[in-house]
Amino acid sequence: MTRHKVEICGVDTSKLPVLKNDEMRKLFRRVQEEGDLSAREQLVNGNLRLVLSVIQRFNNRGEYGDDLFQVGCIGLMKSIDNFDLSQNVKFSTYAVPMIIGEIRRYLRDNNPIRVSRSLRDIAYKALQVRERLISKTSKDPTPMEIAKEMGVPHSDIVFAMDAIQDPVSLFEPIYNDGGDPIFVMDQLSDENDKDSNWLDKLSLKEGMHRLNDREKMILNKRFFQGKTQMEVAEEIGISQAQVSRLEKAAIQEMNKEMFE
Image 1 (cartoon, one colour):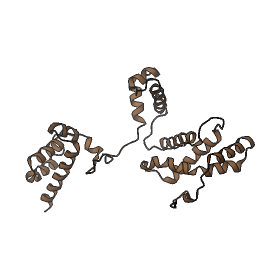
Image 2 (tube, rainbow, N blue to C red):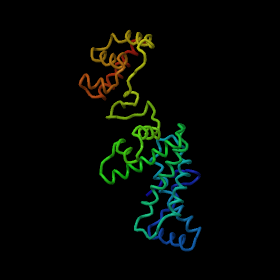
Image 3 (cartoon, one colour):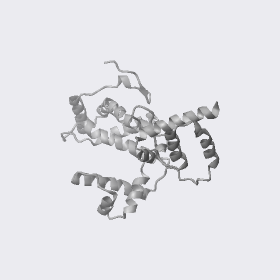
Image 4 (cartoon, rainbow, N blue to C red):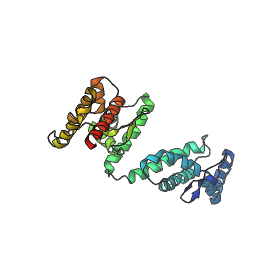
């Protein structure tokens, strides 16, 4: 199989070695029984592809691949140093969660939105409780159930869980049926004072005369009544994707009229 050359942190990934399971077990014995540093280095180099596969999950975070790769390597080395050879588990099964955890800690600590330590502590304890309750009941617990289990106010759980969520761009696509994508901003209604942008609305009204009745109704509900695409779709009995397409087509038609 031909491997494509990709360099990350100066490493040619096409030349990275791949260790077989029996080779890894021999190296682990040398590390754990003899403290052999060269065997440890071979284990690190032989599992760098594992780090590469993990950091693919974080490609949409806007972080430099080199940075994530270096952080992932720290997680890899920690997993090598703490792996219990006596347990009947593959090394990759043990290492992947540790690499992911290391990367998530890095992303959390470098998040531009600062969250207090106490709020983060509540959030991560809540996540642990959530996982424990899922294992116990086989269903996702509500914030109220998590709060009861932890003995803290329900509002604290809600605030803490919201605080650790990653910020989302208004132009983040959330649905695509093969046509025009639907963005986060399409899900938001406009609560602004209706008199504050009257000039824009006046221009919008001027350009609507070439549209058919359904297009006019959609734009009226979206831009004059401040409704979301989902709300408009429910009111007129079509899908949100159809509302999105009709809205975009209507705006394009208005642009032709206004700029001809």
